[in-house]
Image (cartoon, rainbow, N blue to C red):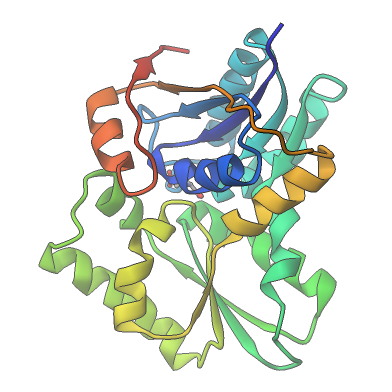
Length: 259
Ligand code: DGL
């Protein structure tokens, strides 16, 4: 029986992680679930996010998944601890923030400032602060609520004046704080990285890149020439998902499924 790695997010953001996973481990099989019906997660309560994610994990279990990558910072921040307990001994879950935050600190020294661009729920959880302070309590962490960025990506509103204005207003906070580095603390934000760079030219840390490496090492992946299978599922609007995905993935078919 074919085994799959389950990868989940509220929408196309998770594809910025899936693309790195496939690049690092091409012979694995993947099931991607984009919960477009409940997107954005970032403005929902922790309990709502827990319930959405639990359903996706149950769906994964029924579809031969044993390893799961949370390609979503928000879920990792507010629901991972509880879900880990619920699915103990059944699913091996990789949470994005907890697995990658230590790598964000490379090349930073005491008293440097790092900014985190993230959803409201991630910012409120203070998860990035917690994980970073565990490694180096002397790093200043400035978390910036970027509500609205996810909709820009999902609806491809990259050129709108209102989008640029909103992005600039958020990056101004990082600039004022003299951030040496900025964490793309939501998997939708790599779609905006070029725009970010054109507004504020500092180093951006994309957790997706080291996430793939962490998973690869943990699964003891050995490369071969075989090309694995990738299946896409969404809970709403597959056509829009395919169009918005383009920047990171050529999705040919996304199946609509009600959980
Ligand atoms: N892409 C997700 C994250 O990394 C969720 C964004 C949202 O739906 O608000 O947080």
